[in-house]
Image (cartoon, rainbow, N blue to C red; front, side, top):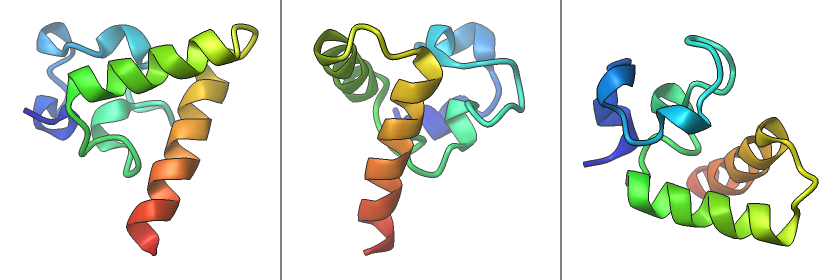
Length: 75
């Protein structure tokens, strides 16, 4: 299953703790750079970045992931 398949079913979502308020810019199931990842892959990436940059906020980590994976899908 990929994150996009949760489609706003936040209570069933395995990455809901990483989301912001519903429909914000950190809404993972609609985020083009993140929604095609599996929850397990996303958590692994997120936690690796958090370990390397412990002072980064959730928003900064998600922006970083979106920028990296969004750029890959465009190219």
